Amino acid sequence: PYARGPIRSRKIESALAEVRALAAKGFSEVVLVGIHLASYGRETGRSLTDITKAICGVNGIKRVRLGSLDPKAVTPFFVSELSLLKKVCPSFHISMQSGCDETLKRMNRKYNSAEFLNALEILRKYYPNCAVSTDVMVGFPGEDDTEFEKTVNTIKQAEFANLHVFQYSPRKGTSAAVMENQVNENIKKERSAMLIELGKKLKKQYCGQFIGKSLTVLFETQTEGFTKNYIRVRAKGKNLQGGHKKVML
Image 1 (cartoon, rainbow, N blue to C red):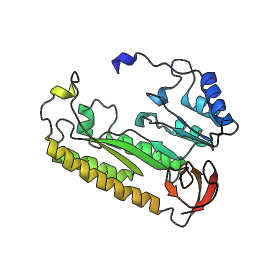
Image 2: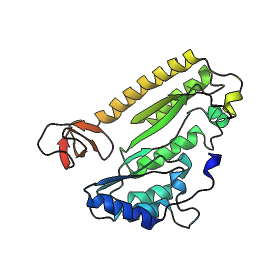
Image 3: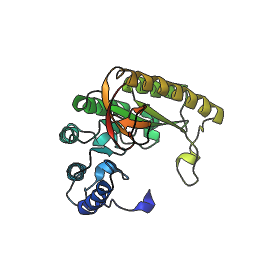
Image 4: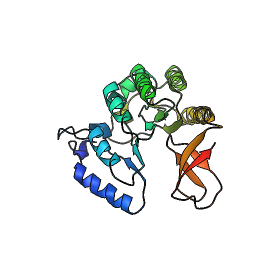
């Protein structure tokens, strides 16, 4: 991260030009991505909501998604402003890494599990039934059975719609690579498998609440597409690709 230097925000006019060009070619959904996305405009006096609002105003664009957000960025003010933009999809990726405070501290993360769960409460207040996904790393140095169990409990409380699980691997030159109590590879695999299974159960639980309901799907192929809250849908029909169609789940 040190090689990246200070935050640099793309000009709104530049982003708008690209989005308008995409809309002219028939694209109807865009995703706003970046490193430390919520810090957009910090050095220019603008904000992530400013650029999101501008892009929502582009004709032809029907959906706008946000890339990964830091839990600290999910404030009542930010989410309330975002909720006024009806093209913003109710699906959010909030970086967690671990659900254990002791592990998070060793990772040098600037939040704890309670603050993370509070961020989800804020999101769900303004976006009921929104989909929330996250990344979780298992086997960070020093993670024992107790710490892992705390992560499991936090994940259950969070009720994620999608869970992306990764195993820690040492990288030369990082402080974590020389930490004591490196976790055995077999234990990493076991914990990873456990969380992957938990993630599948939570995903099924989240998607299950929409069975029997009619949702709009943007078909990316002739048979498959996504709802606004990022549920993958497969359906049969004619001329589906590229279209926004109501589908009974």
